[in-house]
Length: 215
Ligand code: GRF
Picture 1: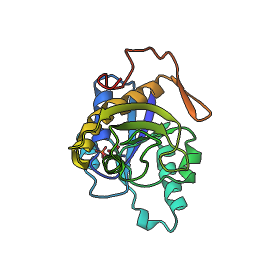
Picture 2: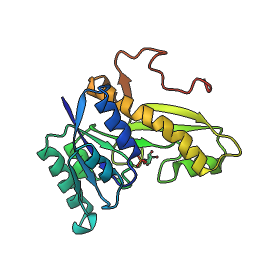
Picture 3: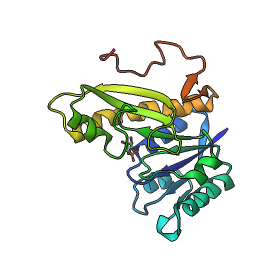
């Protein structure tokens, strides 16, 4: 069974969506370890509630980012983690972890990449005045929100929306497409070709995760 490691910094609602999909049997995988970089992360409470092992690894204890990510990679490897899922992890992952898990680290970003990368995807979309935004699950590379895209989902944006309202609308879809991406991975159905990801046995429209109001 696929063993997943999760990295989180805060609330952990995507972590929870993943837990729910695993517990309901939708995904055949298990979470081997949660690592947080913030001792007050609510994700810890979720791990405790579901008897998932967790570790707080404090970045300030490591002289360099590379040393921090070497330790993170070691802890995942120790538990035979095969896929790393970033669930609201508010740092840019560095080479030692990427090299330990090549094309095996996923992230979710609250915008339709490559638009609005970075820390404020929802606010940037509102400020820009786009009519459609959404979320993107992608593999990570060394850039910021720049790796191969796995799934995207779209939501409408109205003039009255603000960052908070749009964030909530996007979050509901995040909780659907992130577990879906992990499920596809667990079934061996994601194949990276250059910077594109082929989804094997992909059938429209059943598995299409685009808001039908938009397309
Ligand atoms: C989500 O909006 C995610 O897209 C972004 O950070 C937020 C994390 O939320 N990367 P949560 O911690 O999963 O609730």
